[in-house]
Amino acid sequence: MRNPRDFGKPLAVGAPEPLLDVPFKPSRMIHFLDASNDKMVAKVPDIARKTDILLGNLEDAVPVDRKEAAREGLIRVGREFDLGETQLWTRVNSLDSPWVLDDLLRLVGEIGDRLDVIMVPKVEGAWDIHYVDRLLAQLEAKHGVQKPILVHAILETSLGVANLEEIAAASPRMQGMSFGPADLAASRRMKTTRVGGGHPGYVVIADPSEDGGPRATAQQDLWHYSIGRMVDACTATGILPFYGPFGDISDDLGCEAQFRAAFLMGCVGAWSLHPRQIEIAKRVFSPDPDEVRFAKRVIEAIPDGRGVHMLDGKMQDDATWKQCQVMVHLAELLAQKDPELAEAYGFVTTTGS
Ligand code: GLV
Ligand code: MG
Image 1 (cartoon, rainbow, N blue to C red):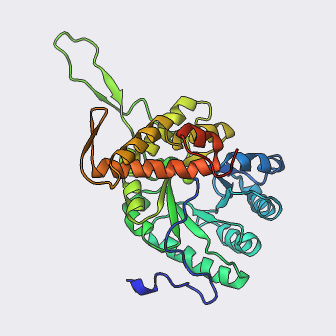
Image 2: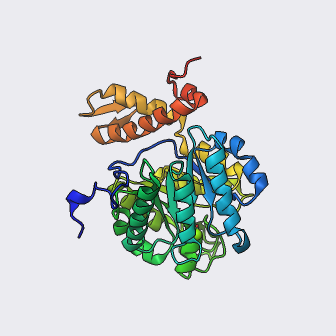
Image 3: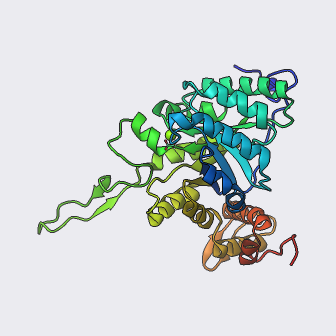
């Protein structure tokens, strides 16, 4: 047991004080960058304008002989590029890998003040977060980092799913979690070969009919249970849930359906592995203008959030009022960043013209 009174104290003398609330900026997409590729790095100023979060990936998908180049490239991005309001994250290598220690030592030492969040893959339990938590505090103290670097866990092992709540509550440094369907499938020994999305074999089927005619089937969602658990664990502890990767880059519709299911269930964003997925995430994770307008009407109709009211034949009460607040607050936040959305939502922008 950790003394709850110590939860808000730094884990190393000289480290910044932990944040007790997770800061929330627009987080609709986490765009993955391979910074070992100079051509990709040259595109950073352009990509940073389009994405809410830019993440330098050091883990899977980066070949072993480019691990160090990816780390050095990310340090260059952190030092040389002004990303404006776009957050800078990294995904470090897994905690049992030969690279992770140097990932953390180099990144915190060189760009600790630029990094908002470190994504830790294959987290299995609270002990993984405790390890990173203390090490980051020591490194922040050593390098005079002024604000705490937050930690984001990828939920991608069966043990991680079993320990979800403990992971979410392990430290005030926990910022959120992403759902990692590819590693999770492997860890669970699922019989799939994909990165996220549905599977045509995972269906329910109608009963046989007397005339022996064809039986209707409907594809089911392989990920519903785990994403639901992740959303509950995250929101119960005040951290942010994200959907992770959708690997079939050419399947925009499939990607959009996966992202939308996650959005409706409570996720705030998803990964983008290709610029075209930035656009999909933006479309999905920005609430629909019609829904926002309706939510505003509900809030106006029940100004104090109490009681019952009929709107377009639908009952509105304290609970729908709260749902509408969630929708309108998110819309307001996104409108501050995006004048087009501000207009679509019917908000007046503070940035003028
Ligand atoms: C992401 O890292 C995944 O394994 O799906
Ligand atoms: Mg993975």
